[in-house]
Image (cartoon, rainbow, N blue to C red; front, side):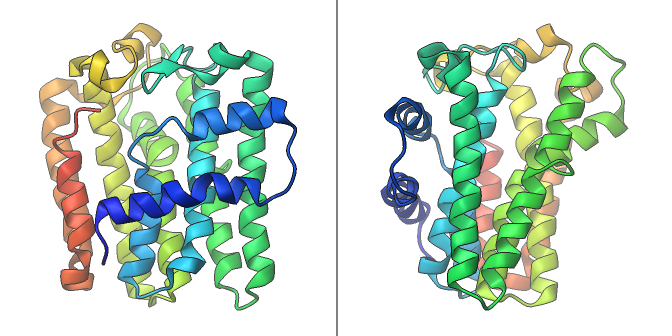
Amino acid sequence: MRSYDEYLQLTESNLIPELQSLGRVPSRILEPMKYSLSAGGKRVRPVMLLAACDMGCGKMDRAIPFACALEMIHTYSLIHDDLPAMDNDDERRGRPSCHVAYGEDIAILAGDGLLSAACEIMMREAVNHPDGRAAAAAYAVLRRAGITGMVGGQTVDVTMERQPVTEETVTYIHLHKTADLLTAPMEAGLILAGAAPEQMAAGITFGQKLGLAFQMMDDLLDVEGDPSLLGKRTGLDDAAGKQTWVALRGIHGTHEDLKRTTEEAVAALAIFEEKGNFFKELAMKMLRRVQ
């Protein structure tokens, strides 16, 4: 297993080249796509995909295109999340959101462009590697990013604003809006590595539990976080009447649930023994993150 920084560097060094490998793109759309892709961040999802493939003793060259595609999907979702019709946030990672910098029309197209680019990259891998693993990995990513996954969760999130907060609704939103895109890298990375079914099940459980914990922490940071560290305004969830874990359980209850869910995520990795240490450490760091 490599270090987080090594997986991060693999992502950073391949992200724009993978996008440009698709061919000539009009500069009017390429510029905002690169602007949003290059905004930095922890690159948690592609790092997880690479590490999951490594944990299953897979090959990095098979995983890198999928890691980059997943980051493109995540970035597209952030561009669209920030739009006035969605979360209406004019700042992302300490600089203007894509629609503020380039206009709403171009921002929508930039998001669409990143999603379609991700699909094209993964389908190219499926064509070039007809052993079935690439196709299965692409299906896993796209299913968890789609209407039964992230998009489904986002839909419930925006349509249930200012409605009575229920555990069923909050859990559905967290599982799909957030957890699905943290489960996708575990599933795809292990598929590419040819992992055994019991390993796949453990990786999926870890991703789901980590995703729930991740969103719980996001909900807490919107209340307790430092805007200068987050790179965006706080208090937006309450102002919009969002269905959040804090609204459901309060600050103290959310902290308790966050700790328990993180412990459950770590426990799911037992099957991997020492090879799971990378993800155990990652989960524990989530408990202490400030952005």
